[in-house]
Length: 243
Image 1 (cartoon, rainbow, N blue to C red):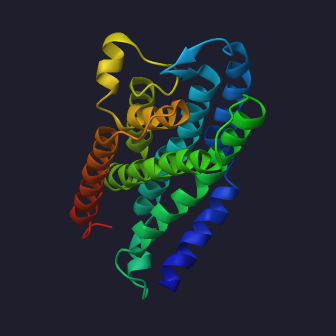
Image 2 (spheres, helix red, strand yellow):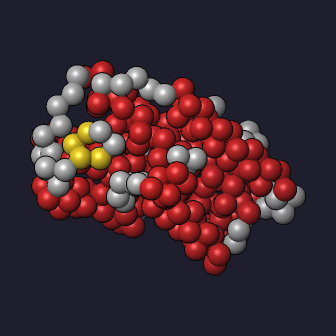
Image 3 (tube, rainbow, N blue to C red):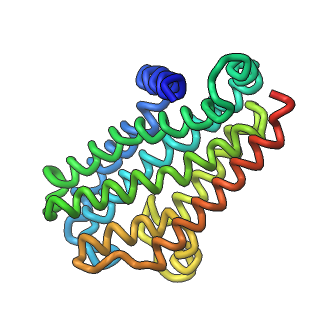
């Protein structure tokens, strides 16, 4: 376990120096929130003020981007370079590499979530009880675990020249159809209700609006997490003899 944690810590440090991660996972959602929130102070979405909804959406954008796109690319490249094979020659447990990647991605999602929520409070004027802030941050953070599992599946299944388009396609589909870039209505909302991104946003807005978390929403997120985890397990096993 100590070896796995050391590997995860090394990955966290490397991500901290990655400019691409900083731009797309932290800077982009922060800038978007700074620009959009003041323009929509007198509108609402999903029963709450637009600034509150957009706070949840942008925190989710940052968390999911960090967990999925960059992580999948690194796994694929390291698999091609033989790094995973080298690790298997050490005394590390067989699942150490995958576990370290997931742990690192979950740690590195924290800054994006924390910064946007702080902006929501002091810039967007969102006022909540302390436990609601923690609950919203926790839901978004755990939602990122779903995409960390998907990143493992994509990274193991595709080569570096194709993994980035695949990851970006999934990312944009999930974020747009899940209502993270803008609030959904009509047929788009009907589609979005089946996605974890939409349900994470609705849990957050429900907490802000004074409602309780929907069991249906939690069940949909859990189902996606289970499905992506299964895909990750199958992808790792299918390439066990080739990496």
